[in-house]
Amino acid sequence: MSEDSKANALVQVDHLKKYYPVRGGVLRQITAWVQAVDDVSFEIQPGETVGLVGESGCGKTTVGRTILNLIDPTDGEVFFESKNIYDLGKKELKQLRSEMQIIFQDPFASLDPRLSIADSIGQGLRIHKRGSRRERFEQVLDILNKVGLEEYHARRFPHEFSGGQRQRIGIARALALKPKFIVCDEPVSALDVSIQSQVLNLLRDLQKEFNLAYLFIAHNLSVVEHISNRVAVMYLGKIVEFATREELFREPLHPYTQALMSAVPVPNPDYERNRIILEGDVPSPLDPPSGCRFHPRCPSVMDHCKEREPEMKPHSSGSQVACWLYE
Ligand code: SF4
Image 1: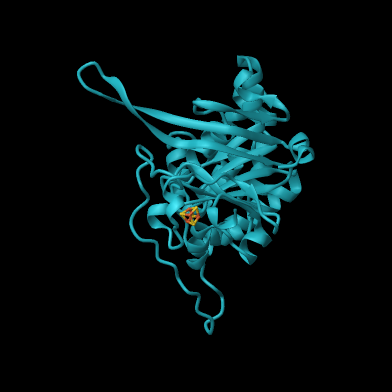
Image 2: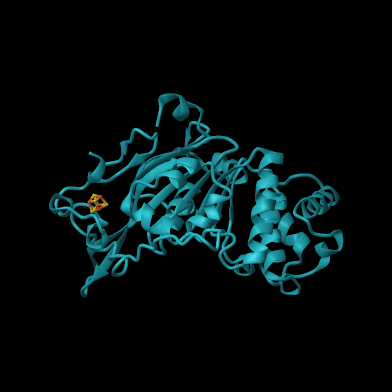
């Protein structure tokens, strides 16, 4: 990460760690730690989308929520517009909440079934005392329009909508306070493939209109390919590769990225990609493997990979990768 890009970053994540204690015995003492996120650093520029990809349980959702200060970090810092968000007082934190929002994977679970769509979307405006009741309602209608819904939807309730429409409502809720940054936590994973591209296009259009920055979390590369400027690949609590979208798809470096890439469908029936099937499950973050955490599943493993952990290093392609193959 260059000093320039750090200085201009909207969000800067520095050595973020989140460990969860495991308690046992009669006295419920801490017996171990689950290393959900372990020393993660990257930055997001205004108007940029950074994709965060990895298998379920690799810590990507924890990264997203810790960046939003919804979860306390164990160590490390997050800066939003150069302010350390963990040092902010109550008032500043409330202001920050309006600038950083989240879109959830399951919009139905995140919407209160007793609130009309107008009340759901307008909740943030009410809490932050933005405008009169009438003005807030006008704003809700405007946002509904922006996410491709109709004004009459404002009076309806969540159960009256399809999955795709509910995700549009989730997006409208996140947009209501005019944030600069949104964590999109697997926003299309629960949707049919035909609806996924509509929601991705909507997110892209809104990004252009409002200069939004996204951290776009997904478990497969094919989803982030269409929306990300840069992509971070995460494995067992650590980022193992960080690259521009073009570079990552042109030359994936880390053996884990190569395996994820081999699962991305190719839109050409005459071309068959060599699928790399990873052996075994993701190891437990309670007791991560020694050395390189990927070594028990890596097709290119070498002896020293089992003992020494590789650090993220710049590669000649411009990407960054943590793998002994490139030392
Ligand atoms: Fe595989 Fe070794 Fe690279 Fe880890 S460091 S990804 S085990 S080659």
